[in-house]
Every structure is written in C-alpha cells, then in structure tokens.
Length: 347
Image (cartoon, rainbow, N blue to C red; front, side, top):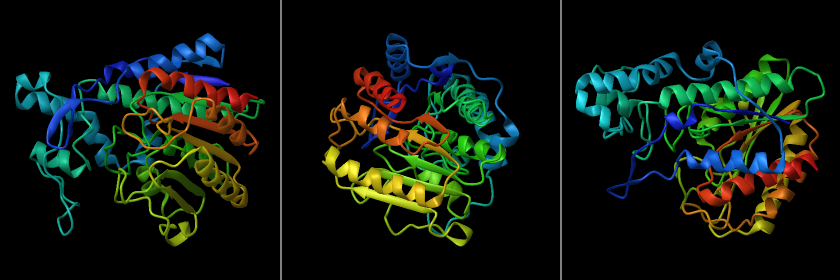
C-alpha cells in the first residue's frame, strides 16, 4: 500500500473553535496525524510518499471556482483588514439562511466567510490553504496510483485537515476541500465507470453527499450517528436517496448514539452490499475512526481490535481502493485505530 502523506499538514493549526458560546481549543490538531504516522512506521505498514502539486483544474471541477478562489485568498484578505488579525483565526459570524441570497458574493469579508461556511467550529488559519491543497494532492495522487493497473491494490491519503464535510462551495466540520470526493473524481477521470464512496466516520459525510447527489456514476454511502441528535444535523437522514440522475445513488445508514460494534457492523455490511449491487469499479473509503469508544466528541462503542475486522471486511470487496483520513479525536489512540484498519485490510 502506498501512503501519500501531507508534509505541510501542521501549517493548519487552529487556535480555537466556537462551542456553545465559548472559544475552546480545537479537537482537530496536528498531533492526530503524527500519531498515525508513528503507528504506521512502527508496524511497517505502507510505503510513504509525498504528493506532487495539486491539480487545480480537478479541484475546481469538484468545488466551485468562486469557492476555491475565496479559500486561496481568504487569509491574506483577513490580515489586510488589520495586521493584528495575523494572530486571530478566521471564524464566521453570519450566515445566509433560508430565503437569503447565495448567488452574490458580497464585498464585505465577514459576509463572504459566512457565505462559504456552515458552522463556527472550523477556524481558517494562515496555513489552511497550503495544508488543504497539499491534502487534496494526496487524495488525487492516491487515486491515480491505484488506477495505473500495475497491481497496486490500495493507497491512502494521510492528511489533515479532513475533507468529508466540505461541499461544492462550503467549509465546516474542520473540512475545506473534500479529499474523498476529489479521489472519486480522479478515479472516474482515470477510467473507472462507477465509483463508490463509503464513509465510516461517526459524522455524516454531508459534503460528499452534496457534491454527488445528482450524479449516477458515484454511489455515496455513509454509516453515521443519527442526525436528529448528532452533527451535522441537517443532512444524513435515511430518506435522502439522491435526485435526478443520482436517484438511488445515495445511501444513509444513521445509527443511534451508543451503538456498539454489532449494530455498527450490520450497517456497514448493508453499505458494502450496496457497493456490490452498484457494481462499482473502484472504492473510496472516507476513514474516520471517531467511532472509537473513547472519542471525546462521538458516541459509538467500537474498540481498537474492532478496526482489524473493519479493514478485513472492506478488503473483501476486492476493489481498487483509496482511503482518505477523516475524523478521530482520541488523539493517543487514533494511530492504533487507523493502523488496525490498514493491517486488517492487508490481511
């Protein structure tokens, strides 16, 4: 397995996020990736590689150009407003909700931050753009590597910030560019006729669903916490099945908080069966390990040993596979849990 890791991920390091009216330390930190890299090296899992330059044309086909252009310039605009802003992360404070217009980009910077975001827990920092585009390059290069037909079974985009909450033109949930969606599109561009994205993060992959919701060539499947009680709340319900050409190409499998490995595995198998029925040519696994019982912001009950079984079950699909690193905030255990998935996958 090739592991494309992001050498500049630590340039995105948020100071605070907003939670219930308070600024609190960010759960999504550079230490998450350091623990995963350490675990992979200790076990000798995978061959580490650094990605090439990001394919901006592909990125602007998955995300809207005006959104990408905003992300690219946001930090410099923020500091230009006031040099003191260099010591303050960007967090949105206003949003265009139902009935408001989304088609016009205001000249006011705060208004544009709100236009392109959906929560106040996703700080944009001095290094966000560089880290996010390097992560996108990891995902794209991983997809192209498994598409070359040289016997490579799987590759991983080991990067942060994560991606599955980022939509066509919005960021949130610690995510700015959708690495899973970029990998899926790169697989399509490389010749895969039908691609499945299987999201096993605790939180619904709302961004990935939004990107592919009206497409019939990409199946999106997400096993996640019930959105009536769990973030991101406003998508992830079982009746969301796709629309237009994408009808029946979206499958949400929400589970109640507190679900154990038995219940979770049954939902995962349902998703795997859907991938088989779709006759996918390639697979993207949005790999979040915040399903772990000790995760501080999630409520499933998987144990570290369970992730070996998850990897083995995914391997039975026998598809060219790209893993993208998503959530997992029990920082000391995140390396063990990711390594267990990849070890179980390798058999």
